[in-house]
Amino acid sequence: MDKKGKVCPVEIAGFLDGRLRKLVHDPEKILGPFISGSEAVLDFGCGPGFFTAGIARMLKSGGKVTASDIQKGMLERVEKKIMEERISDRVILHRHNGCDFNFNEKFDLIVAFYVIHEVPDRDILFRSFYELLKPGGRLFICEPKMHVSGKSFERMTDLLKSTGFKVTERPKVFFSRTVVAEREG
Image (cartoon, rainbow, N blue to C red; front, side, top):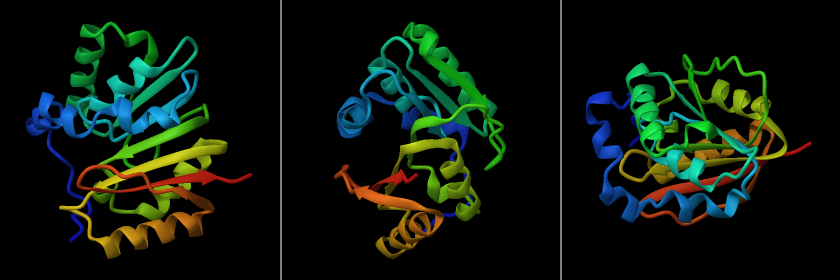
């Protein structure tokens, strides 16, 4: 099953940001191996900022995470969270409209956690990601098994490869399908 194109509504964002989720998807444990502290990170489809906040806490001086979402309501939730946690100096809020990002910078890491299955045109998205990454930059994709079948995930991984990415890892994340790919050259 692959629920392509259905965006998670703001009204259920609390479910994506609860304490129970931290037990299952701890951002520091999952993304810690990919963040040394001074990177430029894009949290694509950031939702209410669950991973954005975790990434920001791991960053040091000079590091920034851009929280990017298509929904204004999600970005409002992120803004509230980062102000409360006093990490707003490490977070940039960005509203995009699908695959058209309008960024002037390049990223060391792009995180797409439980969002790719919502994107109608993955080919365009992956080409955009490739262009947004610095050479050697990495793309971390994690998809829920309940929405994305093994076959669908492998087709998505093949599409990544045909875009120019090299698959480097397949980390284990609870009840998820995960891949890390690197932009070559």
